[in-house]
Figure 1 (tube, helix red, strand yellow):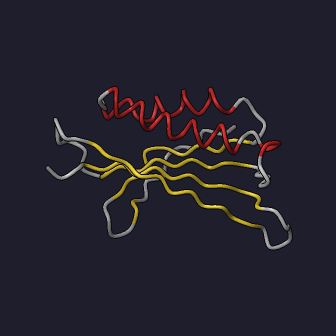
Figure 2 (cartoon, one colour):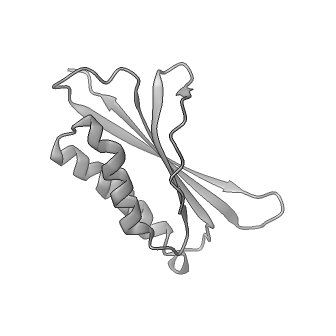
Length: 127
């Protein structure tokens, strides 16, 4: 399990900033590590508890499904989590939303997918 430092790069054209990255090896005690990491990454945003639980539930669902590689036809070696948020997060009292993108990569030499990337994009909902 790795805890790389967040990149300083922004997502092009949308003013997204990477809040955190986590690489988990499949088969490790990843479920608890994922939960702790997400709480650490998201705590500076002071998110409402209900919203935070929705993000955690979504991430845990992915972990439960994909890290238990014996129960799936796809055998991933690693799962890479990324969390993005708007660069300007100084707006207090905003309602947050998120969407999740899952990417499955394949190695040119292997028949099975080798890596899986999960990206969470947090955004302000328009009111």
